[in-house]
Image 1 (cartoon, helix red, strand yellow):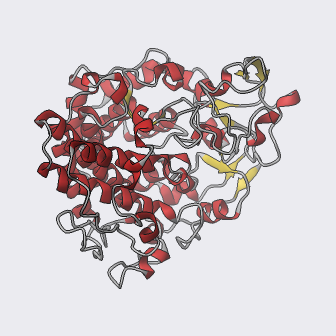
Image 2 (cartoon, one colour):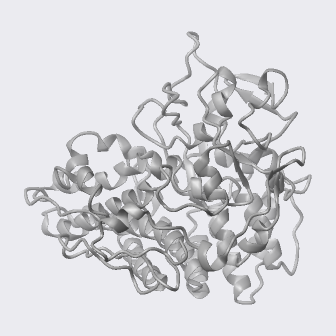
Image 3 (cartoon, one colour):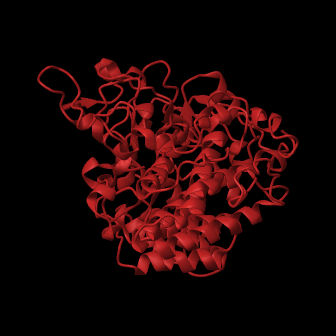
Length: 511
């Protein structure tokens, strides 16, 4: 999530306990810090940097929660057992693709709490100390939110770590997820007060937390909490800050050259040259085996249902989906998708591909025939690239503002038309939730904003999943599925975490 990721290499990763990673196998919510750290400004810097280090884990923004987003009607995956289980809501939480998500998020939160607890006692200049604390509050809140709405509901929230006493590691679940949302919002408000604006960061600190990112996550938290007044308030702060604007051309949002554009709010970024760093998501979405030119993994593909949501003159369509006959540039050569040498493999069950993450693979190879490591990792087993993978962008904030307004019975034409007009579509008047849902789907398709939980939040999941999904030619690839809102509106907590919790962690009902 950072241009700063090179700072993580070395002892900074080990600042917590000497056996931190081993203890995570036994203790689900972190372990105490050592007493011989947290003495100097260098310790403080290493501690803050270690928060970001785990974002490079493939269980985070390489695949991670996107396996769970596979449940949505936008996504088809190549055949594999766990993906099929997720699609059909028959998981138990022990699946190898997803079981570590909980653990890694709680370890990051533990590192944030170490910073919050210890940095006030270290002699550092006040602006630096405030920024470090702001980063910790922000990152804790983001990790907390990503678990809260996926695993918590009105019947039980998720555990809130003891920030003051790191030895108190067996924490019961919050009474309900509303308690989590309140805690998250409080952290984000603190973060926003402490953090600078993005444009106040030096280039070597791009990717660190900043003020409008904190406000943006308040908006997202508020939508899940159904606190529409707060969502409108903080979205309005962002929109009136003068710090962000939509790019004129939608396709430009997903180019390496625009990683830090006016539409950037928060993203997972990569190093193409360093084989240990960054999000592998672009390579994960690339056609399986990459037509022999690169080791694409071919995990996630768009469905015909998503394709059919776009109207013919929507500029987002050609920037989002590659379908049969579409021209695109692949390692410096113009080719035709799903024709000739560029036919899709048998594992591509939809016959299409997401195009949003293809910019890194457009650059020519070197004269020796190797990939250009300024853009693509030479290690196909770690297919990270130089492209930011958006987690929260300005268009999302605008759409969340529109949703909050509509949920309060207010007019949201201005916001919805901002998004439509950029897509080349005419303005509408009297926009409804139906319009909002369509714009949100077309704008954010294939991104980490989580279409599945949009449907859950709107109460649309049961009806949507009762319909089959199709490939490009209209062949059914997933039959109608049974989504029970009383059970499937949250995912099961990994049983390993429950087993080591000494009875403090209970499973979600029905799983």
